[in-house]
Length: 156
Image 1 (tube, rainbow, N blue to C red):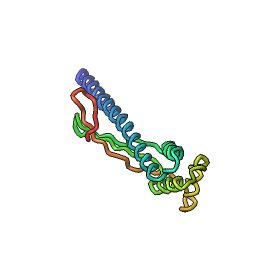
Image 2: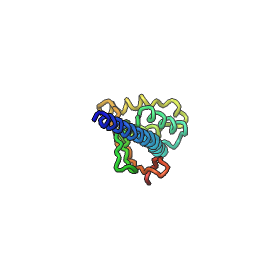
Image 3: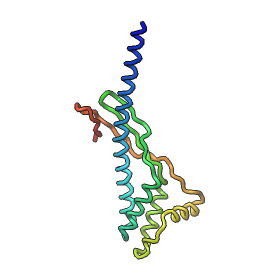
Image 4: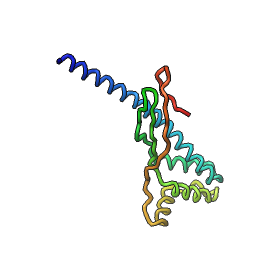
């Protein structure tokens, strides 16, 4: 009886660690892909609004990346070979980001290096009557398949 119980407990922990290991792999991959996706979104925002200065365009993207955090909030195993991961981003609301990009896009190219994004965000906050705070926004839901080699790949 004791041996059966010990074997059951050992088997439980082996299975638990295998799931945790697989979950960690999926989480890491989803995080990398999510960060890349968010960077692409910021580049589109900057390219659409800030055309007069490459420096200001890149500065906007860097500022937003520093003020944002991508996070995997859920990994769910559907089967042994299929899983999903929900990725969110804690960042300024889209309306604030687009307003900031439009303001930066209106800067004179010769004065673009003096533009201060933090002050601009504060000014936008005063205009709307509240302190701009990052909010959690959905970014993407990834679907993963496990290959015969044991690696997880994104389903497109």
